[in-house]
Image (cartoon, rainbow, N blue to C red):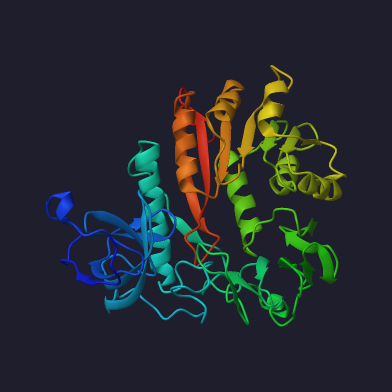
Amino acid sequence: MCRGNLIQVSVRSTVIPDAPAKTLAPLCVGDVLDVTIGQIAHGGHFIAHANGRTIFVRHAITGEFARIKITEVRSKIVRADAVEILEPSPDRVSPPCAFAGPQLCGGCDFQHISLGRQRALKQQVVADAFRRHARLVDVGIHVLPIAGDDDGLHWRTRVRWGVDRQGHAGFHVFRSSTVLPVDKCMIATAGQGVVPAATYRGAQEVRSAEGSDGEVVVTATGTASSGGSRVTQFVLGRSWQIGLASFWQGHRGAPDTLVRAVLAAGDPRIGEHWWDLYSGVGLFSAYLAAAVGPTGSLVAVEGDSRSVRDARRNLHQEANIKLVEGQVGDWLGSAPGPGRVDGIVLDPPRTGAGHAIVSQIAARKPRVVVYVACDPVALARDVEAFASNGYRFAGATGFDTFPMTHHVELVATLVPIDAADQIS
């Protein structure tokens, strides 16, 4: 039974001494404990142990000795915030944002950690995901910074803001419906500072975006309140018109970086036939189609109608691109066969593609699959699925497209197991 906020001090080790479970007091919300912080876990938490339970701690760093406060207790998970750092890590820095910290904005996980250590921690999470879910060790995946991103701030070109009852824009407290009003967001591009400066009475949500040309568009619950409904983005010399509701990479430098990475991984060649699955607004499609030339072809499949409309707007002059609006799994089940498919770009949602879609892709025997992933665990699971369907993992690169958060983008390559090197 929980009796209040007790101060308990752990040994300075993540090893739990053997003890009968009945002698351990239950952990309760509000309890405060002193613990040693262990390894990072997927999702931006760090592991600690106390009273026979594993605790997922935010605002800490591996190796620190910290005072934590329990924020959630469930049968299978306990969460806590580090509220005082008794022995700090040398990689701890002062958060640049006044709204980063326990019980404040839930958007940024790592503002208290130096950028170099952030990327090292993300590499560790990726390696652990591949070891656990793909049974691969020493995968050697490095997380690289986006060119020109020196401080991890002012990179996010698209932001969704919550609105409190007074109409002030802000962000949700971690795992809460409470909106914390803010006067600025340190990871948003500077032009989007117009959002918290205004009031949005009666609105439930505000979306904002800043284009490559500096134009800022703001909508409140779907009604345009500033600018138009689309922004202009420039990627590798090409102009894109993108609606606020369509998916677009958030980091200002991510589209250029990821397009280059996809082209390098897949090595599309003149006359080849490619598929771009979960193609969104057609970002990869445009450059793949240019690479295969007029004698080649590309089919882009996307289920979101708003993104398909943007794709049609931006790609209508590309004669060798066929745009398909539909769910990828449904389309694969009815796609004409046994037509030749040389390469496939697979950019699924955060949950991954899954065994059924992986099996359908492998059945077409492309020489290469380029997998773009925003979740290392989902990617690792799908890599294992590809392995059971005759494809091996041939390497990947991570990109720090979400500085100050636990998120990471990965571009992986898969080739047939019976081919020593299909893409060299």
